[in-house]
Image (cartoon, rainbow, N blue to C red; front, side, top):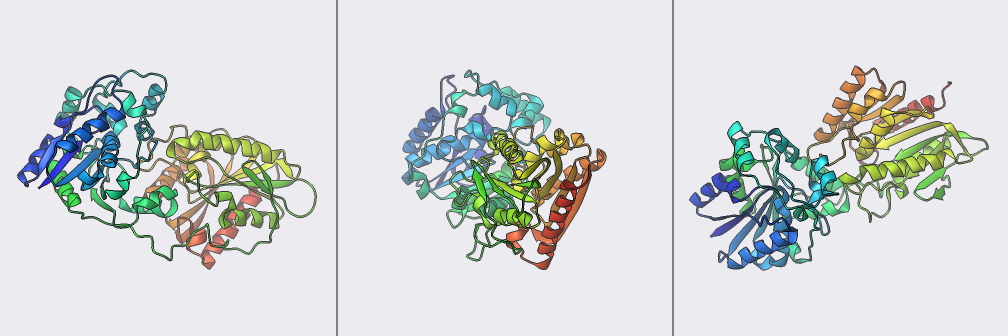
Length: 490
């Protein structure tokens, strides 16, 4: 017999699972609805110990731990300590925390993150529409919201701030993820993150992880109890889609730049590499900003990959200064730190003896696109152009933890006469493409100067993935558009 241990989101208890548990039991399974210790001093470790004690009491051979939202943290900790007693872990509308991560990193409400940084008293539960700060309310009725309001309890602060501690036990436990597509990414987006994101996502490849989708918001146990019960039974049976990379996967870490470039030497200063052109005198400069998040231990770092070196050398060959920067965007909560790294790199670049400090362009790629917000909101006079290649320009589902400051669609109202060159991939990931369309709508509304360079058959990262004449022509056109603006007359 399969036993499901059901652990819910912050502020909730076993009551959250009533409708699902009833259906699981009718299907012949056991269902344990967990209400964790609400002691004000309880921490994540306290909740994990409670689950370990429960696992030690369950006699059923097939025990499946289900973690919803915050609940995935104590679930992972318990499974790591008792891998021999857990048949499978199920992530339900949950993030992918690693060893050392506090649950606070995945809290979407910025005000909550700020509060817990200065206040260790229990966090009062949301009320009414405030629940949307913890996840989509899609499908919830007024009665469902009233029930959340009535039964929710304060969440001990240390359960959200105490780091998750994992050994190697969890590596022996299969996992499934139920992707609630009205609340977060679908499986296609997860596959994209596996292919292009930090290396830690690579663990999702292969038979050990299975993915299922449910067209629901963050609270499917309330809005879709029957469907969720069915999906959990399927997850317990190991059903679902697996992700495979394939041996032929192109990579900007391995493939040479798609345009021929000379081997211009570079000068390294901290996080900044500068590629001066031949000749003398001060020249316009373009700083290339990589996307992310990228793993902190990634090797080579972005500035040492053929993609960014290629762009910088190509600019140097055209008589401008090319520059690259390694910024510290290692997680969705790192945008402010990365923005500081870029500001410092620009200051250093403008002070370089070969750079005209009044003729600078900033060229941002992929997930770094959110970093454009600062420069759109208040562009300095020396910033002559902002270029964006297959950018993320809003918060796709699951990116809600990014600070509100980094919203280019809102910031474009302040762009004024700043020219923007937008390189758009026709086969972009849908979640990213939506953010670009939102940005363009706002740009039209505010009269922003945007030139679009389309790559109709190009994918996200087309320079490495789609090495076609159309891709080469798009790069050449985009470079020329940027140089025309950064070298143009006053």
